[in-house]
Image 1 (cartoon, rainbow, N blue to C red):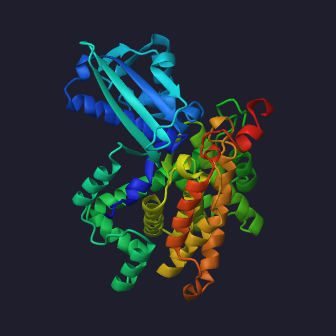
Image 2: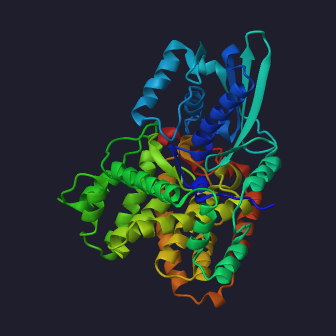
Image 3: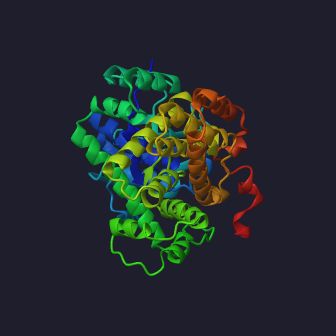
Length: 475
């Protein structure tokens, strides 16, 4: 059964530092509140307990999983909550030992006791969490969720959930793999972005598609802008100094601007030698992931840990490759990127807890490479080749964050993914697609097989690799 995944499923606005460990648990808490309301028992709840399992437990502190759960239970929305309000809400919960459940009912909540970190893994997925609500008659209501990457949350009956989605879906072009996508482009004589657009129109109006895509881009641009203009030390204890600020200052010089769009225009006037291009792309990616690491607002693309790759590559196109690019190209880029991400979600995984960092940076690089290739005039076959090249050279990439924080090696890794995406797009553009040896579907399948073979130490548990070679004391 094909799964209909929208661009807006793959590109979601939220709060850092992690889509699977922050945004997912936050959304799970929201869904738990909905269940309590559906059962008409929210006003009867006297206590709530949260159990975190597997990777959510092992790296949950570094990923702010506990904070996300508290914010979700409080009824806050990660897409719209003012970032400056987060610390105050958390501090109130911790000092008063109470939480306003669903922003409606105040109950006792002792975060050190009521959020339990269990190292055991639940069998369904590495990122499991269970909510237990206690009623005033001592009855209990339990619900278990799994954060499967990219902010997606499912119950254990995932197959049934997919079936329900498919039944409601009315995509004119049902796409289960890259081969399906290519066949539709040939059959309809359309670009990949045009096929995606037709699918999106089956779910929402053209005006809504335009508005949401531009809201996503505005969030990306603001995130890069904030990151390039913020200095200091990132939270978490690793004492990681922000680098985008200094790099940006050296690149932009004395340019005059006062908002993200005028900033973009000023960058277009700067020097574009090879070294400067490398620095600009790296600066954009660093900026996003430094914002992400400080619990800022980012676009999950396809995850928070890899949120810097796609905006960095799109910004590269706008400020280096095509100064005349407009909203048309921005929307085109995002639609192609979202579609490639959906292929990986269906055929493999976008969760580092399941597949290591190949599932995050690898997928984001593949998405960006494909999108850039289409904007640069690539055929659909070349676009898919660009996606394949980018992933092929991320296969086996591990996830071993030091201290469980989305900082080392995660922030720098976004710069690598962005540069590889540009390189992959250029290679594809210079290649006759008839000579391609490795189809994208084969790489997606290989990535999944690699993920299954990968030692669990390298799947976002901080139990192997750099996470144990470099400890907090070293930093």
